[in-house]
Image (cartoon, rainbow over all chains, first blue to last red; front, side, top):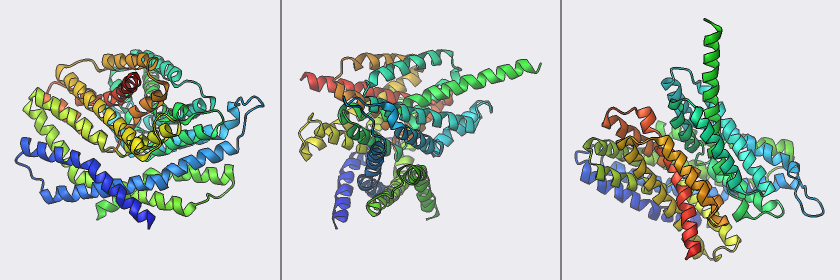
Length: 256
Length: 243
């Protein structure tokens, strides 16, 4: 019963959230694009689906993905207790956390449909020089490394901005040397990789980790996993583009 | 109905890698079954069903209007109208973004637990809504800058480099408790609702203007939309701390 009341409340709340967007689109559409072939009935049905779907999704997050991410953080830190008498944390005791983070990052990204679409487009644009699987694996490795490094940062409690600054410096150098066509694509993949189901799970993992590792504060240390998961794929895609350019140059030189 | 089944399969496929990895770790590393398995799977079923209905509704209503509008506006070529539409598109899609609603909620819980805000429901929801509005304004602004860039032919690389340099500089001035959320909000904003509409808008604009390459000019809006939320959230944190 509580479940039903909760869900209905969430759906009503969502309706209030989505209403301005719906109104804005309909008004703008009436003003600009009068000769529309869209039926009002279709619009209303569509928005009802959006509201109910979003409400169910959010209610499900509270009961499914958030607890699951927290649970994994709790259980994985429990199997890897590692602090000495002074309360200092040995980061390497948490190796299962890092392996788990890597696996989740890689698995969710390789299977991401929007990434496949981008990879196909890039393959077409580059005339086959960029392989679909090569790009997918490059992005997935970037996300996996990003999430794992983010967990390392939470465990050690080192400041987020040093990692980000170092990352940006590497990015600037890479961008200066990368083929122009791939640059916009690389920067966009950073935004595309983090899907609607991955983000809540990864966010809950980070917060759960900060709650369970001694001496960490969720608000100060618990965030940053998603930032890393968006930053590192840009680097790995640029690196992959440079490697393919290098390989094609070498093979051209090798076969005159 | 067939279409609905395909979407349902797509949501399950999104979740499948997460299940496989978690199941492997439960069996091999933790060697214990998950407690409360029923409650968790109930929640997961809600996530699958909700995401399916959500995307189905988007494809039925939101995407056709959004795309038609983007093309119609791009063809009209009135810059002030384009800019107004770009801002509203960015703001509207971000406010409705499910991942942002979720993360803003988690952030408000963390802020309340740390004592940064009062632990009441009102204070938490005000914090979450405030965060979402700031991010939405940031994405709206990003699209305005992106449209001006496409129309006027500014260099994307220089803007992104400059933006990241500003982000790094602001980090040293921003209150520490906003930094993590700010950096994360950049990645969260660009998701289910925003990416398809914004990409359609960018590609439509670049092809309607002519003399532009949709590949290099149409892209880049997403990159800008993941950059500005960092700046705006840290800026917002600085202003509220200063007041």
